[in-house]
Image (spheres, rainbow, N blue to C red):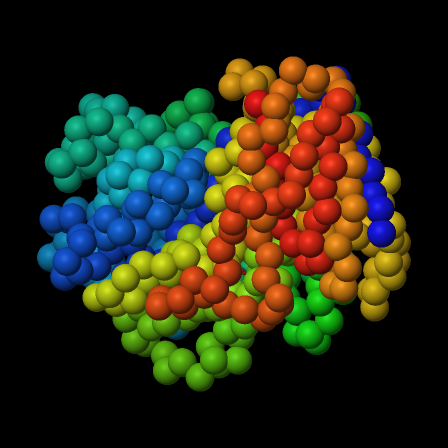
Length: 497
Ligand code: AHR
């Protein structure tokens, strides 16, 4: 099979906000306790943060991390997590039915984020709480001093405000499983009034309103329309969440699921623009795809967890090679919407449906999905370009006309680098590809990274990295055309500069 791509420096989709490569740490399973924090671990800082985990987070160059939930935030009292640790209450955490010891809270997470060279995306509780707790939290975190909550922060040892810029107005409030679940009208009203109060405390913050928990929710996309009808002028982003899985073991169909993701994004954009038109607004709403990943491997074992433990292993999916391919495709889908999707979070970062795993008391290791995430985060900064693609196609159980070739292109004008991300979805055959880059005639080929494996179900473990990329790809450049043969089911990164 043969495919062709034309790339031109004038075919611009949009500037990539670095927050497109965000991630997520929820107080859930071993993400915090036993993940980023383990007091007794030999590689931990005095405060208990695992430096081996921090090094891996830095390798990923994660620009922002959503915190503290997730479903957990909808019944969370943030005041429980500040002040002297010895005085913090142990509480029933209702979302995941565990005990939350509150050893880590807002201030400690801000400390961790500094060490990991990332920003914090804070979420407020709009399930059991509302305007008052949210505006107090903004005052506690962002107000310099001279008020009750800001002085309380200072008394807790944090003289400088955290200056958190990005805030989520609750989490998945459309979901009946959510503590304090609301109708779209109830949520829209509350989100609007909370947004107004939070911005009165700190007008520099940016706010994310909850969209649907996934595209299959019966209230999608009416939820988006109603929510935005209430909040349009006060919020800056609308969220999207979606998880994928290969439950039926149909890889051709699985790798096509980003077509569905693309439709999801387009529908949300259309809904935002409908409300924009309805309101005769000059403002364009941006999107925050702040939960995405593969999540299905651990579903069964999570049914068997006894309630009310502290940090039991939950959602510990062990990812396969084919999951890494889908993750690459998800990231490319986000890149092709870089004009509207400004933030996104791989959910999550450590131990819980995560690229980074830890052994309690032992090592930290990289899952298969670590690699495409790292490639796109590290090399995908700059302007997203629209590749013009001609590819053979296939049909699968749920999709028709699935291009074998999936691609995204990033031009970093400042560094004079061009990066081409490619996925060959073909399960059987390699793909002969020509890429016309004549508008980058002064660029030279630097590297062709490939992630490939004969076993679609290959996984990494603490002892063995069966799935890892190499730089021996076969791309060559001649007279403005790159020629390459992409191995079957392979993820590729071609770097020029
Ligand atoms: O990321 C795991 C969970 O998935 C989050 O807590 C929730 O927001 C979503 O349903």
